[in-house]
Length: 331
Image (cartoon, rainbow, N blue to C red):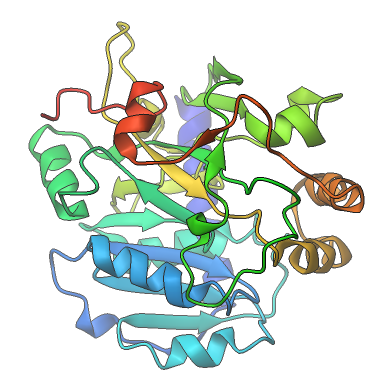
């Protein structure tokens, strides 16, 4: 389709231009080996989260982290500079004007991602996939490659504590799911985007509580974070969808199942109140930071996402039993 080809060329051109806003702080990309799985991240003021985040993804098999720091002043930049498997760029340019960081990420993917399995995540997102407790991420990517699959979807699964999100202090380096261990097992709506062919998923605790009167504006939960990258690919809107659009067909159109995972979303910790206030003040997020307005209102009323239907997270098998992830035909 000509319209989508033109859109992709536009996004790639934007990435080249916005990529010039990135100043290298520590470029270790010469260390990247041909078969490395790469993680791409944009962040600001996430110092307290970084030790566990890096540990988690190192443990499952990420070989190198390519990170954009958008003007942190909490020590994130200094911490990341000292990490031997991190390449770091910094910019104080507008997050909003860069399409919420995706122009910067597309630029780094174009430069360094070609031929690699690339995982694009936020510092509060943790990928869980079938057999995650016994098989490294490399086992998944090898299986995907052998089956001719180029992209892997993962639904964003909001995790939350029992009680007000500000009640239990989060300590640096702590597993966030020791606190935010609960999730909604159902309450999700799915529809198909006819143009880009991706699925659009909404629901969960944010739709149930913060967006109860306006569910159509609840945050999207569909993600395609893991892709065997080529230079001509581009993310269109966060990691919700890509071009070419064939990468978005991460479901069986005949009604069967294709392997999928979940991104456990550890946003709702005690640190969230200060983070939400900062981001609301900056007004650098989508739709004039509408989501952060809802967060602030919820925090003022001591937001508690827990309900009688909430489930306590155990492992990927529990999510499979609930239909939230799938092994497909990966035995």
